[in-house]
Length: 70
Image (cartoon, rainbow, N blue to C red; front, side, top):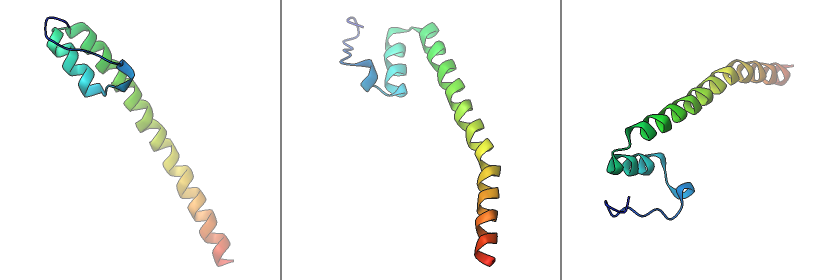
C-alpha cells in the first residue's frame, strides 16, 4: 500500500467500495474475491430473512384488520 500512497486509518471506517479500491490498487485479487464472497453471503441472509418476514407481516396485518371490524 505504501507504493500506491494508500493510507488506512481504520478498516472499520471504510465501506466495502473503499476496501475494494484498496485491493484493486494493490492488485490483491484473492482478497477481493474473499471479501465479495463474504458480502454475498451476508446479502443473501438479509434477503432470505426479509422474504421469511413477509408472510408473518401479512398474517399480523390481517389479524389486526379483523379485530378492527369486530
